[in-house]
Amino acid sequence: GGVGGGSGGRAGSSIGGGTGTPMLDACARLGAFQVPVPGQLQAQSREAFEFAARFLALPEREKRRFRADLAEGAIGPNGYHAPGELGARYNRFRSGFVFQGRTLWPLLGDGAAPGAADFVPRLDGWRGGVWRLAEAVLGRLEAELGDAGLLLPQPGHISGRLFAEGGLRDMVSHSQFHIKRMHPAPVKDQEGFAVRMPLHQDPGFISIVLHASADPPGQGLEVLDEACGAFVPIPSSGPEVATVVVGQLFHLLCGRGRAGYRPAKAAHRVVTRPMDMDKERLAATFFFQPAPGDLLEPLVAPSEALADACAPGLAQGVPAQQEAFSDRRSRTLARYA
Image (cartoon, rainbow, N blue to C red; front, side, top):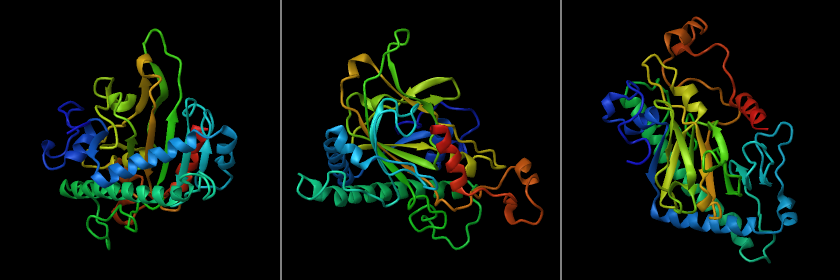
């Protein structure tokens, strides 16, 4: 159920007639779907959002002690950014903090401040819970790719753990997460709402989005339906539900195969009606992706056109000039600047 579970979408894009591969079908129809969050993770998410709100309520000078800086050669930023920083177009109306992999900083300061000593261990536990949820989703996607006959042989991997932490195609260990607060944005009179985050695609393999509040439902997150050109609102939000969105890497690694499976682009935005502008909006997004040095080898057999571009003699048609994820990520960060 949830987003991506309806009957709409692009003709011919589902696998197995919509039976047996519900996640792949949802990825093909809209590129997004929702999953329930386990009870313990719900409680951890509420606590993580409380910690984030406490930090974001600090004076700006205190927050800027932890200012994020994308230094030359860095894989990604860590720390706090104010509205308009770390990508002015996408963060014009957002502030928050971002961390890569297992990195966490004591954003509430030393142990003397209320809750300061708990910040890192509690957020680390919460992050681990989201990682386990992601592994469940990724394990299901792996199984469905196999059931549909799409997945290339992956010698030496443990079934169900291909994309898991420590797996052969680990998408978890080097993930990134951020927690961000939305700030008021001008309402366009002709549309009757404000676009607080413009239309975009996520750069990773999949993303998981968690919201602190269920009011308004979906928090204004909308996914573009390529079939009809209309925006589909995410139906629900809050700690009880997570929204899964496919990223550009999912297209690159799974969507160029000869079997004809084509995931939707899942371009999305955030809009807000005037009546909801003053409501608190805190969201956490996890971007699941490979290690920086991993080569972006296809997960499905390439199309004939792509195979023709591959060097002769290479097993399974892997392109002769493979790109490392770090190179692709550098180009993506440049576009966000």
